[in-house]
Amino acid sequence: AQKITQTQPGMFVQEKEAVTLDCTYDTSDQSYGLFWYKQPSSGEMIFLIYQGSYDEQNATEGRYSLNFQKARKSANLVISASQLGDSAMYFCAMREGLTGGGNKLTFGTGTQLKVEL
Amino acid sequence: DTAVSQTPKYLVTQMGNDKSIKCEQNLGHDTMYWYKQDSKKFLKIMFSYNNKELIINETVPNRFSPKSPDKAHLNLHINSLELGDSAVYFCASSPTGGALSEKLFFGSGTQLSVL
Image 1: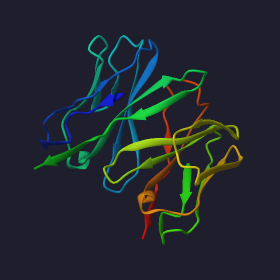
Image 2: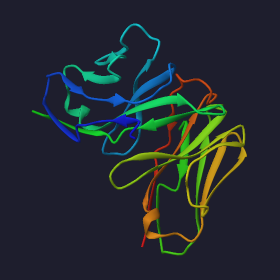
Image 3: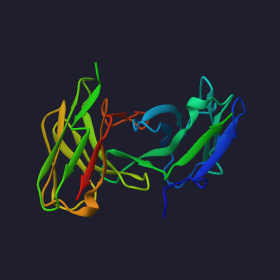
Image 4: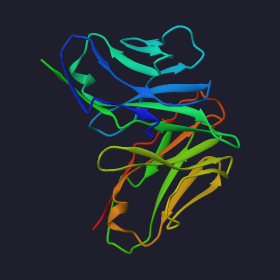
């Protein structure tokens, strides 16, 4: 079973509009961390935002916010006031513990966002 | 100063060859990783080392052998390269590898093309 599901392979948004990128996850752990990364066409992986499973407030970082709904196991990324430079691939990821110790960061399949004029 | 640097950026080689990718981090982190990104952009963890000790070894062909001479370096050696090995390989690091809140710091990736 997929640990991280991103159902939108591609999204379009008008410049200055807000956009929501969906992410659902599957875990039986109570403690886990959720991350979003951005990968522009140049290829580097850029950390955007983090949400802990016990955090009561939704995480925010500038124009990025994470809409965390624990009961629904969803961690959607909201980008406000989209800019042309936001055009990129966006990955949702989850870090959870491993049997025997340690933990692992698992990525979803990504959503390609295109911001249009 | 680049925090996580990997070389080379591009690697083009023939099937059957052996090649290495090098990674170094100057962040003082204890844990380093190798991820593979396939042609569909899917990122999958391959290996993780903590203080030179292998802690994650995913289902990866044994043609892939990571080596960590010290905690600042994690190299990836690939024997008998196959067409299916063509991908982008990312090195990453994190402070301890133990906290669920730790983000990964990624290198810029190595595009491997096997002909």
